[in-house]
Length: 213
Ligand SMILES: [Zn+2]
Image 1: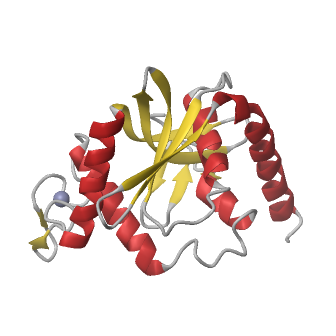
Image 2 (image 1 turned 180 degrees about the horizontal axis):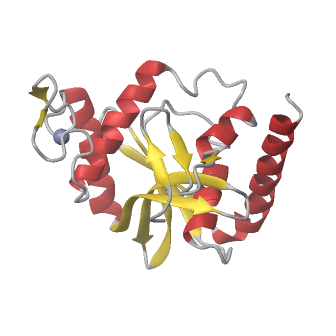
């Protein structure tokens, strides 16, 4: 969505009217993830960001950090996305392998989107085709865990990508430091139930904000 702006400094989404919009991540953090300590360690977050940025460059995006210059202008230092450490590179190779082996056709890379019905904004990782089916795909770099909430994050993005709520397939590809990957598939048959749960969470979030909880 063109008019929606994202502020990387504050991690917020802003409508042209100046109104702040909660993100998918924010709502998940404040509802289903509030007890999960593994969710956002600073280290994991930084690593995840670098991996995501490097995978986006692999998929044809201009580097978000150096804008394709190869160095960060302020320092100047070599760009950690374009000249990644071996650790980051291992994850990127896992993504490359996943793309090859699963035949992932990338349709969109890190697209900003907005759901006016639920008043939520976000950036999904990929719109893609796998095995002839079109869907939303998230790249994951965290430790193996029961990814219960991934399906909710994916349905939130899917509702933005296809606002008519037509059920689409959802995938999470978990990249590992040993250059392997795992594919999690959430089929269209589970879409509606997850969409209902997600919608309920957005209402619960709003209720908590309005009632100061
Ligand atoms: Zn760069």
